[in-house]
Length: 424
Image (cartoon, rainbow, N blue to C red; front, side):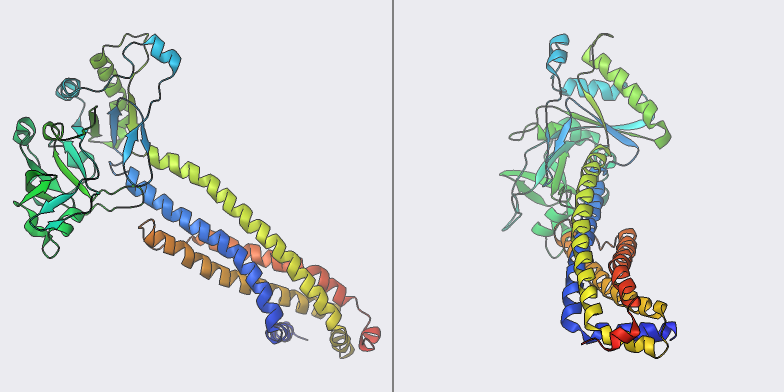
């Protein structure tokens, strides 16, 4: 018997036992689907996180009075990170960054960079234009002329905020693309120079921002940007200013961070013996934090897949052992017409691996489908295929099929042809 004859016979045998094959394929497919589906969803989450938290760019960092703590859903809040011993040691701890301090830093920071001051305004606002209104999901941000550059926004139409807007605090604003689509559904470009209402306060739209991309982590396009002098007059503004810094060259990021730390310590009037009572946050900090967290979920997914595949391997081996008993006469006939032990081993190994690879193919297809449904509809990212894990899944299932079939194949190959032909 040639190798192709052996493979053809194995394939026909698998095809003939539809119920047995289907159940085993389903068990293997479930394990691979769980693994590939979770990995696909995790890669989508990684992509969403990077887009959400690295929006400032690789050459930017910020100064805050406390570390930011990010909640799923897009709004940041600030959390205490100061230890009790540090609080007792330094009386300046937990001080907000005041407007005067932020402006003093901006005037005196001479490192080659762009400095932006910001003050977050109210969140979950409803914005109106004539008889149209947005959902109450809009956040108002107060910034300056450098705010959109440092925070990764791009202007689509109109103009940016200028120094006169900032100094006067007049009611002008830039609106995100989602806000424009809600208020001007047919022609969002007509939003420029229109009067909208944030709450009950009228604002003139001076610029329309390009789509930045919203995700499960942020709603960057549901934003309105005005000057920080204006946002501080709105209800419930943040109590502390933020300072964003974008260096001209990414190679200078560490030097700029050190210079900013030294200068802001002077602003805070800290003694050399006192610890910093503010934090420097690089733009990719949260992405790194969440990606590290998701690594543990990946390990859990591998564990789930491994347990399921282990059970599938036992089931497949049992089925192959039953097949050996049922086809004893067939094995005797193969040997009687000149088939060798290796032909019998090959046939049973081929059957085992065919079933295993069918389960792998179905599981990969289902896993990619389920994972991408989450990616597209939950995490708002593009189509993701974890190619490395697809290859790993195929390799693992091939190994499972081989290991599950090796003992039944050896058992079948050792059958005495005379005894086998007389088997009832």
